[in-house]
Length: 130
Image (tube, rainbow, N blue to C red):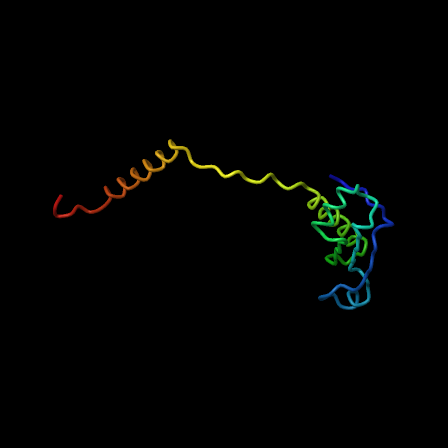
């Protein structure tokens, strides 16, 4: 499921990335903070908005600073936002119904255990009684 989110609904802030990098890392504002308000977005119908707010909260924050390029960090942040929304929009799997092994399955299991026990018994050193 792909969402069409208008750029006007994305709130961006930029800052310096942490870690090594010398003068470039200290001066360049390449880390991208993306804020997206699910509750205020017009990109979803009411049912989908309710599901997303229940799972993610009223807003989502994505921080991306892995690249030295602000444009690359912006693209990665948008990609992560879409992946987060798609994952939250996916319906829950149906609940598992408990089952019991059949009588034949229980019998086969016990026969396999007896056969394994016989194999191990035959590996033992003979006792003085044998």
